Amino acid sequence: VQLVESGGGLVQPGGSLRLSCAASGFRFTSYTMIWVRRAPGREQEWVSSITGDGGTTNYAASVKGRFVISRDNDKDIVYLQMDNLKPEDTAVYYCAQIGRAPRGQGTQVTVSA
Image (cartoon, rainbow, N blue to C red; front, side, top):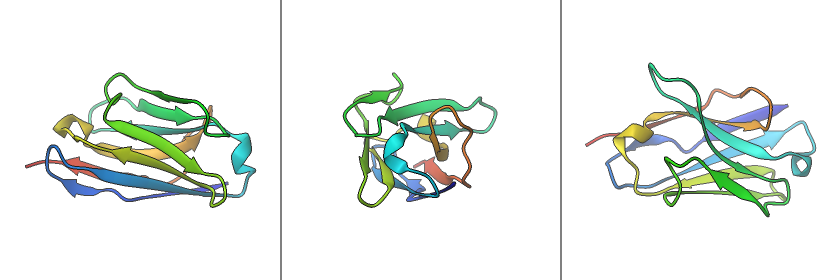
């Protein structure tokens, strides 16, 4: 199993980023995929999830209405579109198969003026 996150960066409050997670080594469509984040001094936080067929999505209250999760099952990629970013969104973002610990290096998102 390999999960490679990308797309992070430095953005001003109110800005947008689109994260990608390229998956390989498993049957991608069989898994609900999740995004989680880790900020310094804070516990890991679940952000969003999407079922294998992409038909059902869920969001943490802290990001609902600002983030959108999606997936491309032809390319084995899961995305996280993040709009109206806030400083409290600053964290390292990881994707993972549901129920399993993140395996990748994550991608840093920093929201700062």
